[in-house]
Image (cartoon, rainbow, N blue to C red; front, side):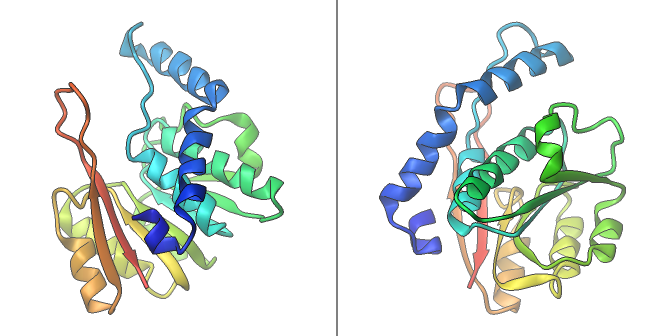
Length: 209
């Protein structure tokens, strides 16, 4: 699906999957830190759909990524790692995460703060003031349908023509699909299926041209 949307060879996309999954330094760091936050000694980091986020960031070579809703900062680290690898290949890029909880982002690596920044405050207010063109947008903040839809409409005039929008709430609402129809954008949905786990899985909604 990512190969189809980004028009990149599927073997390249698989390479990006493996690139993140085999980065044991990052995975061990995140696992160690999540245990310190009180999630137990058996806590394990499995990226799930985050691997898809990473592959999109690697394939698109975005100059600006915006993620709404940072939480602990696992997604922030994944996306900044993608940007870091893009920079090695000669493609500059920056990450911006929005988050209203001042205690959030505890896992966000210090070394990523040269290419990434957490903007604290209400997501909608932050997006209204944001003055850079967005190449990759990820909605993962307040998961109410109305707030999600408002985010998409707030960035409408702030996205590039090739911008891809990823929705982390599309297993619950149809707002990204609706927004895509209204703006004559294409929409696809990928649903993750965790193996032997109590959580049934979420997914990635993808809005693109």
